[in-house]
Amino acid sequence: MNKILLSLLLIVNLAFAERVDKGIEVCLVAHIVVVDGKKIPQRGVRVFQQRDGTFYGDVIKNGYDQYEFDGDSSFSKAMASALAELPADIRDWNAYIDDALGRAAQKTGTLFGVLDGWTAEIRVATPTVKIDLVRENAGAYVLLLGDLDPKISKLKRLLDTIALGLGRDHMAL
Image 1 (cartoon, rainbow, N blue to C red):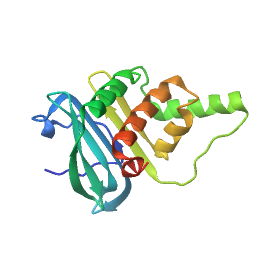
Image 2 (cartoon, rainbow, N blue to C red):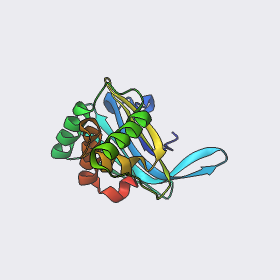
Image 3 (cartoon, helix red, strand yellow):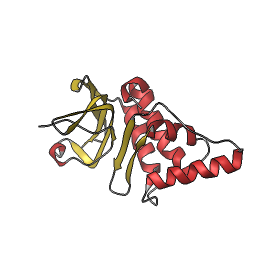
């Protein structure tokens, strides 16, 4: 099975249906290279919810799955809680981030920007939430705006939960 994913990706993957419970897959990958027209993430993590409610996943390094991990019960509870809090009413996360940047600039008098330049993808698909955020520095903007916008703070909480469980470096955001 092809386990190549795009940057930060949380999608339902039917190939994992035998292990996935509620159609929840969290994938956080970055440093994408293009080989023969295919986008290949160079590092990141993928997290899946199993039938018993616990989460497990893969760590990707150098474009390949390096190892699999099983989350403990506290990680699984934190993941389930963070996923349950994600807002379901935002249809265009790219536009919402742009709007939040404008609101933050008006409120604080400061323009916000992150200039390291790689494109990241944050994808979330649960039975109630779909997030498809593709932009340069997607993770950095979520972390930056998470303290200023209550809806973005929910996505930041999910990223922070994964970072606490696996380490932010693996996320490559």
